[in-house]
Image (cartoon, rainbow, N blue to C red; front, side, top):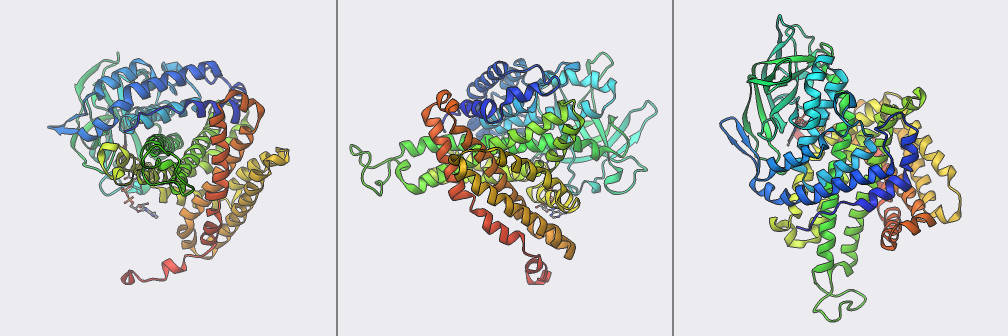
Amino acid sequence: MAEYRAPLEDFRFLLSRVFQIEHFWQSLDKPGDVDMDMANAILGEAAKIAQEVLAPLNQSADAQGCRWDEGEVLVPDGFKEAYQTFCEGGWNGLAGSPEFGGMGLPKTLIAPVEEMVQGACMAFGLAPMLTAGAAFAINAHANDELKARYLPKMYSGEWSGAMDLTEPHAGTDLGLIRTKAEPQNDGSYLLSGTKIFITWGEHQCSDNIIHLVLAKLPDAPAGSRGISLFLVPKFLVDAEGRVGERNQVSCGSIEHKMGIHASPTCVMNFDAAKGWLVGEVNKGLAAMFTMMNYERLLVGIEGIGVAEASYQSALRYARERLQGRSASGAVAKDSAADPLIVHADIRRMLLSMKALNEAGRAFYLYVAQFLDIAKFSGDAKRREQAEALVALLTPIAKAFITDMSLDATIHGQQIFGGHGYISEWGQEQHVRDVRITQIYEGTNGVQALDLIGRKTVACEGKLFSVFYQEVQTWIEAQKGEQHDKYIKPLSEALQVLKSSTEKVVANAKENPHNAGAVAVDYLHLFGYVAYAFMWARMAVEAQSQEVKGEFSPAFVEGKQASADFYFGWLLPQVSCLQQRVETSAECMMNLSEAGF
Ligand SMILES: Cc1cc2nc3c(=O)[nH]c(=O)nc-3n(C[C@H](O)[C@H](O)[C@H](O)COP(=O)(O)OP(=O)(O)OC[C@H]3O[C@@H](n4cnc5c(N)ncnc54)[C@H](O)[C@@H]3O)c2cc1C
């Protein structure tokens, strides 16, 4: 497996040039007083821990996996020490509220750190990801006493977090959950039930595990309106914050699964376990939704992390492996054959990976900007507009990025030929690991339904108009013929998306199945246009003299060639998707069940 190298030059290009991030941070209120020097220092340190501590564990941890032993979960060799190093570096508290010991940094800086951690070792990266998600929900909804008791230790990583939503019969449809919460006289609750698939639900790396659990009170209304959220620690905590006796929460087993072998996926049993309400009774699902946008964006970031690692190793292999001769005559004349990279088909796959990964990276930063505005801006109107864009773009950032990331890792595997199927080279692990990103945090099919249903049809395309205006404003601000080769196709693709959106809204009124039938294709159409917007912005920037002076010639050439490849090779998908999106569900729904 090739060594993982953090893509620091691309982060610098995107942050300092494409998104003019220092200026952006100055326009916000108190995002951790961050500037570009501080950002570069943080990214440099994160790169070290990713490259030197986490990446070396990725393959051995996958091979060893986790082990369940009488309720205890043993993680692979090296994980406990790596977790300790990670905590000592303060990496768990980047987003945390400064009031409780967090650093309060903007998502636009945290997101690249997250990509490096996930790209180096995704199975490990899930532990801090779940802790940050749980802490986020506690900070947003718990009372002051719970916040003061739990958040400082979660931000330091001494205690980790887990999200306990799924039950054997309730996955997408959480309204079906059966876990019960009985109120007690002292204000606490006793929780009973079984949760499955709980990531990092049990392990020995931290001193305590804080579970955020969805459950129903005895008199709760049926369905999703009767769900409440509870904090249930593995060990009970006294008023001084000391860890005491074991709570009645235990790990019944762990799953054997396709990828992320080093991340324990646990069955968690709650047997009258003591817990505390977070937020209001019966508003648990809404409380979970506040953190969903962050978590879903992070799943997209995971996709880019793994796809980048796959690209790096495929590129190295394509430069070293000698097979056949170039179609235009021998290139490595002193060797028996030319390296794979001379072949057009290998270049097609490498450029597809590069173009998709770099657009995905730009797109997650683009969405992260709106999360930052929604959190840190003092301007109510600006916040409202940012919230609209976060709502619209989050399902695309989760589902399109991860769908494209799987495609990228499959290209990476293909470049290795038969060796891509063999564990030793690490490419098959990238394919196995990234696959889950399409499934958890709401399947990609369900993300597409959210985009087309709640975010498009229900508001008659109003949210889409906010995005349309954003892109249109940028297009109108571009001057100079040298940009036309990017601006023109972007403009045309944007018009296709606009007319398809109008058609989707109209078709949904004719038949309730129409929207569901075309949802994934609509999300992909949207994704291709969003990536075209990112590539146009990167290409225009790469043409500037400042960038040519500041970045290496190879980097600038690679950016321009990838933009050309994206517009020439990948964006034409839009016409095929348009045809599918504007059709009806008849060909799927007319068939009887027996006919399948
Ligand atoms: C490795 C792993 C880690 C996980 N980690 C966690 C965790 O930490 N915490 C946690 O709570 N859960 C976790 N999960 C659970 C995960 O979030 C769920 O598996 C996922 O949300 C899908 O639920 P399900 O498996 O029950 O599938 P189902 O809900 O049964 O869905 C099956 C299929 O039907 C489709 N579908 C469902 N409803 C509809 C609909 N209304 N319309 C159209 N299509 C529909 C889905 O898209 C999917 O393709 C994890 C799962 C795995 C495998």
